[in-house]
Length: 45
Image (cartoon, rainbow, N blue to C red):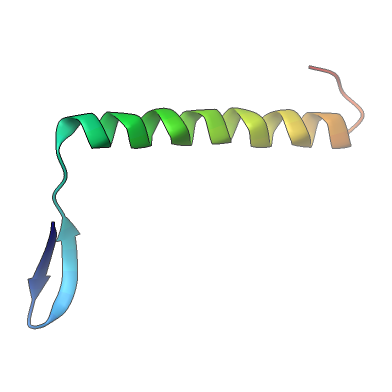
């Protein structure tokens, strides 16, 4: 649900399950990005 103020989006309300799934996805993407940067810098996993 998008909460608006004066016709502009100001906040998002979502159920806890969706929120937790989003947080898990973001954490995995962050790990993937860090691994990719490490490999590009000549490091290893």
